[in-house]
Image (tube, rainbow, N blue to C red; front, side):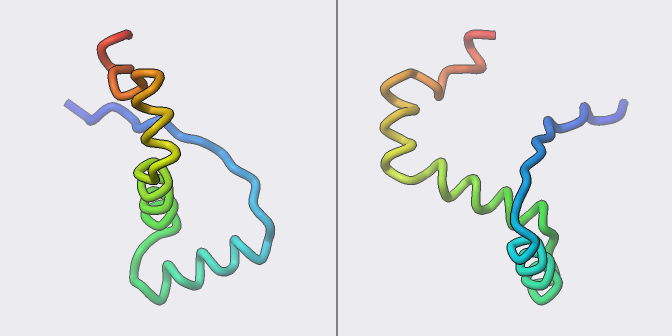
Length: 65
C-alpha cells in the first residue's frame, strides 16, 4: 500500500533566496525541501513558538481531529 502524500505548502520567496537555497542544497548534496524542512523545524523549536504551542495546546492537535 503506498504511503499517503505529505501535506504541501507553497511560499513565494525572492529570486536571490531561491538561487541561494538551490546553490547551498547542491553544495551540501541535499535538497531545497530538506533545507526548508530543517529551517521550519528549527523555527518551531524556538522558545517563542514553543510558548505559543504550549499556551494553546497545539502539541495536541492530533488528538482533536
